[in-house]
Structures are given as C-alpha cells and as structure tokens.
Image 1: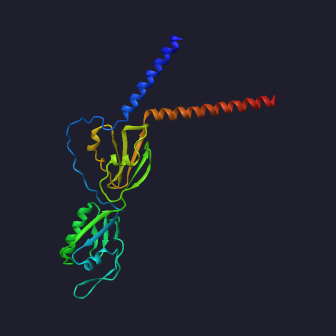
Image 2: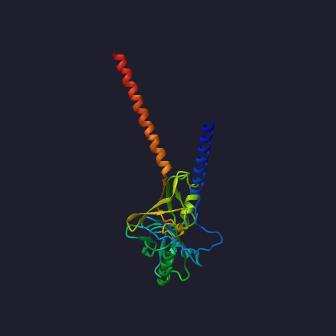
Image 3: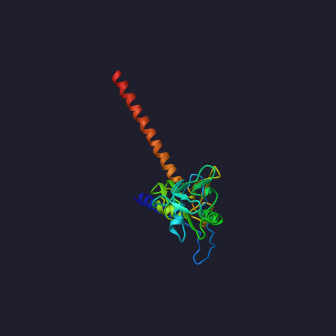
Length: 267
C-alpha cells in the first residue's frame, strides 16, 4: 500500500513539474526586465510592390480642378485650348490604381508614374511635384494608401486564415498573434516563421516570441502578403506520431483478426 502511495505521489509531482514548465514556456517576452528602458527600433513605412492596389486622392482649394485627377484611367476630364482642365465625370469612390509589372501606375493627365519601391508618402510627394511643375495645380495635397495589405497565419494559432488590414500600414507580428486569438499550447514559441517575398524571391525568417529580440527582427513589422507559420512543438509532434502508430497497430490487429476468421471459416 505504501509503495502505491509513493508511486502516486511521484506521479503527481511529475505532473506538477510538467504543468509548470508548460506555463513558463507559454510566457512571451520572458527576458524583458522590469523598470528597464529599451531603445525603440525606427519604424519603416510599407514599400509599394507590383500588383499592389492604391487609392490616390488629390485635393486643392479648387475642388473642380482636383476632380480630374481623382477619376480612374483615361477620360473623366477634358482640356480646353487655354489649358484649363474640365471634369466630364461624376464623383464617386476614390480612384484605384494597380501597380503593373514595370512598377508604374497610369495616372490621369500625368501618364505613367513610377510607384514600385516607393512608400505611399514618397509617391504622394512625387505626384505633388509633377502637378506643380506642370502648372496643373499650384496647391495640391495628395494622399496615397495601399488597399490590398493582407497577411496569412497558419499552424498552431487559435484562428488561422488571411487577414485584410484596413486603415493602417504598420502591423506587427504581435498584432498578428493577437488577431489570431493567441497561440495554442502546442506552438513552438522559439521558432515562428515568417515567409516574405522580396525582390521577386521568397525568404524565410524565424523569430522567438519568448525573447525581446523579436523587436529587432526585420519581420517585426509585417509587409504585404507575409505568411506567418507557427510550428508545432516537440510534444505535439510526438503526440501525432503516437496517434499514427496507434492507427497502424489498430489496422494491423484488425487485419490479423480478419485473416484468422477467414482461416477458421475455410477449416
């Protein structure tokens, strides 16, 4: 009886230790010290890429003059002999432009404008300078926004899928984890992968969400079409392997039983 109680006590201690270890492993940013100031890494604006959809809005003191530059594609305006621009289209939603393979957009009146490789702020400034240099608008104000900013989360997250970001350009990997409803107990916190397309190639980065070093990672701020994959930890892998072996043994046992029955029937 005493031996059984001793074994039961050891089992309970082992379970408690395992439980504590699991809770410790699920703590994010473990090496952050209290009351210590850490430098903040400078943020970087999104860089426009091929196939990005952009909304560009031009405003000025004369709304009718600016209207011609807020119409998508050709048309929507006319130019008289004295160079005055007249709108020939009705107002509607903001004009949307898709960045082509050569990295440009076709902007009303101005024609092709380089967009790839620029931030939204830089593209707005480029359009503003063109409008002023051609004496089309003397006081333009231009705003540009990427409208197809999405990222995807796969693996050991409570909610996987593709997320469409609206209204902002700065989204961190921690924001993505929160949006996914947090990670599961089976997540491998020290090896979260971010797959990113850069310069026509795919590159994979790994970050450790347990460490403050995640703030210094080049993928801390997400970009368009980033894919976040949370790997399963060793416990999950072993559990899956054990289940697979159980299915194999069950199948083998069933097959053996069927063969034995067939043998008995033949006799």
